[in-house]
Amino acid sequence: MKKTIFLAALIAGLWAKAQTHRFIYDVVYKKDEASEFLTKENFHLDIHPDKTDYYQRDFFIADSLISGNIQFPKDAKLNTSSIVSHKAGDELYDEYDLLENTILKLQTKDSQNWKLANENKKVKDLVLQKATTHYGGREWTAWFAKEIPFQEGPYKFHGLPGLIVELYDDKNNYKFELVKSTKLDKPVKNMFIDMAKQNGVSTTWDKYKTTKLAYYDSPINFIRNGNQSDQFFLNDGTKVNPTNRREINERLRENIKKNNNPIDLDRKINYQ
Image 1: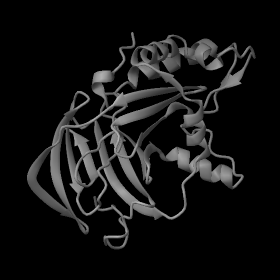
Image 2 (image 1 turned 60 degrees about the horizontal axis):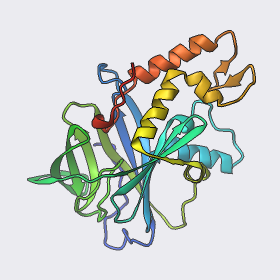
Image 3 (image 1 turned 60 degrees about the vertical axis):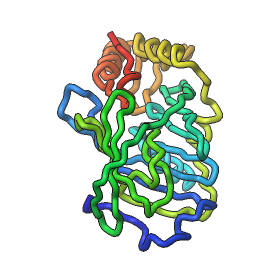
Image 4 (image 1 turned 180 degrees about the vertical axis):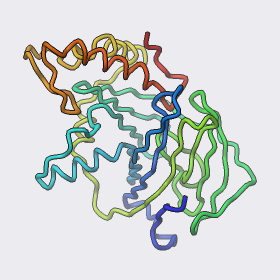
């Protein structure tokens, strides 16, 4: 964690509950469990006084660019990402799955049964304590900092007596590493996150799975969603027209089937 950046000094009062604190994680993971190829992305954990939001950094970048009237990159993953949100002290999590032009809102109750270990290590100015748990079909190891008094962590991980600074599973499929933290004095607003929450369609797990399978069955038809135009664009800027529609449809199906290694392994959808 040589590149980990923390605020200047960890004094009581820096972590006042009445403010929003943003923690940025490096997330290194395997999209395809059978592959050794690793993907690296940044995610934000925004801890507000009344709620917590976890989302891909692309949402922050896009909001900043739009606010400055600057066009954001076509390869931004806003339409193929998810946002995880929950109220302070609540184990009910709302997950907004952005499936191109459809937003599914799935609510789950999540908690981890942590086992605290009598093992510590020092990173920069922080003393981290080790904890382990079985969650979502994986074995996890976390290192948390009591000096940062938030019982939160990346994704849906929470419940330790301090912020989770490092987190990884025993198969090296996922590793989360805190790299930066900052205090925000003003309320945080993000038009893309707010829009996703406003337009999310509440669904049960069975309906969620059925919708995901329908998307896999024919991604192009799903994305078109009644649009009768002969051509349209994917989120990455690819132009789809009658001459390449079948080829792109099969490519999307292959990507969905191959890149199917969710954090919650026990909720993995079986694409045939």
